[in-house]
Structures are given as C-alpha cells and as structure tokens.
Length: 114
Image (cartoon, rainbow, N blue to C red; front, top):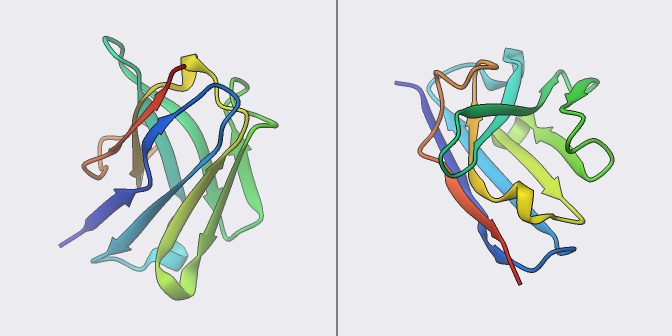
C-alpha cells in the first residue's frame, strides 16, 4: 500500500534552516506529482509547494524564495529545504500525493521559536 514517511522536523530559531525528507513507497514515485502541505496550530491544511518531473515546480507565495523543493526519484524521496524560517512557518509538515493533502503521511513537526 501507499506509504509516505516524513522526517527532519524539529525546533529551530527564527532565521534558521531545516531540511525535511519524505520516503515514498507503494506507487510509482517518479510519475507522481508530489506536494508538501502544512498545518499550523488551530488551522487547516495549507499547500506549500509541489514538484513534477523535477522541472515543474510551484511555491506558495508565503514561502517562495525561502523554501526549495526537490526530489530524488532513484531514492523515492522528496525533500523540502527551508531557510530563513519564521515563527509563522510553525506547524506539522506533510508530504502528499494531492494538493489538498488528503493522501498524506503522518507528518513531521516544525517549530520556529526563540
């Protein structure tokens, strides 16, 4: 069955960096557009970024210029490099197979706080 396993979250100070990873299995990863979505405390799921075939990439305006999405199809792994993190980036980050995050992993917590 489809599995998406995120890792790499943690506590970081404002301005810091983190890299999230998501290992996928149970489907043909290389053919799938992949997404990062997040959920801030008390709020709904928010689309962050997506990537298809390594070239077609989109970012939420809130993270554009600070986050970089990438993928390694040989390793069935999706990444999210997050730089210059802000307290507003705090939340649970999920990789997903759809923009709304209905088919997502268990998530990894990112907390940006001084």
